[in-house]
Amino acid sequence: MKKIFTGLALMALSVGVFGQSSADAVFRKKFIKKVMEDASAWQLQHPKHDAKDWTNGAFYAGLVAAWKTTKSKSIFNALMTMGDTGSWRPYKRWYHADDITVCQTYIDLYERKKDKAMIQPTIDTINKLLANPFPTKGRLEVIKWWWCDALFMAPPVLVKLAQVTGNKAYLDSNDVYFKQAYDLLYNNEEHLFARDLNYVIKPDGSGRKEANGQKVFWSRGNGWVMGGIVRILNALPKDHATRSFYENLLKEIAARVSSLQQTDGLWRASLLDPASYPGGEVSGSGFFCYAITWGINNNLLDKKQYQPVVEKAWRALANCVNQEGRVGWVQPIGASPGKNFSADSWEVYGTGAFLLAASEIYKLKR
Image (tube, rainbow, N blue to C red):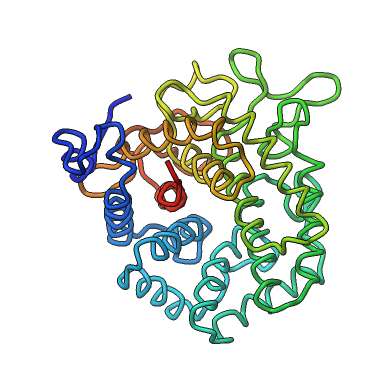
């Protein structure tokens, strides 16, 4: 895989400016802050999609992490401007997980500003979601969160909202909706999530499979799930009755995902058929790095076992950012593994995943 370095990384790796070996330079806090600032700035200068779209919701999650890590006023101001410009409202569909993703950021900013107007539209929308059934068409949409990506988009909103409002109904509803998706899409043998019912193998063995005969498990889809679980656990009360379910699920997926990491440190778009998908994919890999590193930092995952995984992943991720701060090697929007990306392929959620990973690597004690 072609490697593209940030200016700071190139300097660090070539002349050892931080006084570390080249392999360790990307773990210095100075480097991590700089690459987060560069990636944030580049992405903010290259907007894409509606500001409230799920793609940007994932980017803003990373941007919040970058703000909290770097203490950058410019990043914070960009987030506040986004919220003010959009009147702190979700996107178009009250019932769709994608359209409330941006509300995670509204709640994060509310915790700093304590202005109820920043979360009232979110409260109104979530109350409507809880009071009404999903308007299914009777095909895939058999439950509210019928695709695995939704487990990053919506659950953190409900759990964060419970945290700031004290309304436990949001926690109870999240448990119900999440477990429905788990029962529908989680493969208990592979410890991975199918993207949706199109990728669940039928009892007679029929269904979509990869060229090597393996089941189709999308890297980014499972990255969405792991990232969502982490964001749930960050806000979920320590004594919540179902906390152990989320913790054990993260442990199961982390063990399986770690076994599928490729020699270059990244994961392929299709987890069980890497040979058919040459080239590491950064959005899925970024979410994996984020979630597993969080598990180490929070004493949920064994450091001795998992630190080599995340260190290898971070070295690779850092090498996928160019001198301008653009995060490359990101699969375009889709619902399944793809091969249509390269060093020049970028998307806002790829930057978000990278920033989330960086924020946890920054905290990692080596």
